[in-house]
Length: 193
Image (cartoon, rainbow, N blue to C red; front, side, top):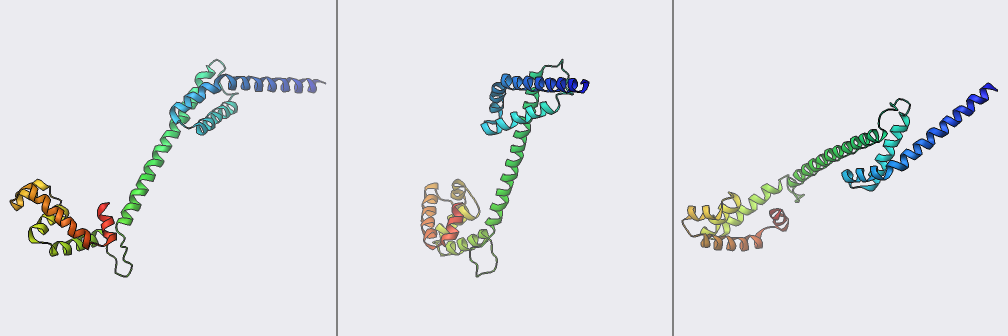
């Protein structure tokens, strides 16, 4: 009979703990959700983290100091979980950005002309531009070379060629018309990017 009394006592204690835990959940859930949403801006993730917080609280309930404020403890755990989630997202974002950059660099160096030996798009474009510039009228070709191959500014080109900036614009416009007609479509696409 003594054993049955202990079992009933343990069942009552367990039932009381569960009721207290459910009450704690009801009291704090909505405030914790608002708090998590402030950081995460994702309802599903906020709910998952809150569930993790209460699971952690339940698993450590016997070790917790009953004199400490449960609310502060719950919000401290939630804040740390939110911050860890944000840190993870930043790291994942940087990794993804780095991977995109590496893929772009890899694609940058692929030639679309499968029949020829490997030549990067940049080199292919430079060769085509040199060939096209050589076919342009002298002043037009010189302005085009200074602008597109050497990266000079219009003002600098005008000083080098000893002409006005208006004339440089006219030469560049004429050069662009010639280039559009002669450059290969895949190289033109690369030039735009």
